[in-house]
Image (cartoon, rainbow, N blue to C red; front, side):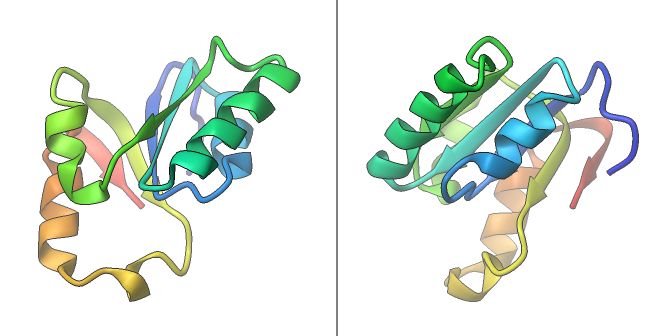
Length: 109
């Protein structure tokens, strides 16, 4: 994803948070979004243990609700790990929802 210093990054459907924490080490703030309450709780614990709770936050929500849940936020970079799109019933809605959260000139991976 290139140089992440100073970027706000959203990791959609983060699963268990390790990729999000890896990004948080390289940027000012990373946000992980996932529909699993269990995944969010565990990711928050991992962030605490890794000393990254001030640089990583985790949000519990359906990805299609991201625009509502994260309405006041915008991101320089949004990414989804490989394999997440195969489980989505509406790819157009997924992409549109996430792209609406991008800052002008932002990147979606």
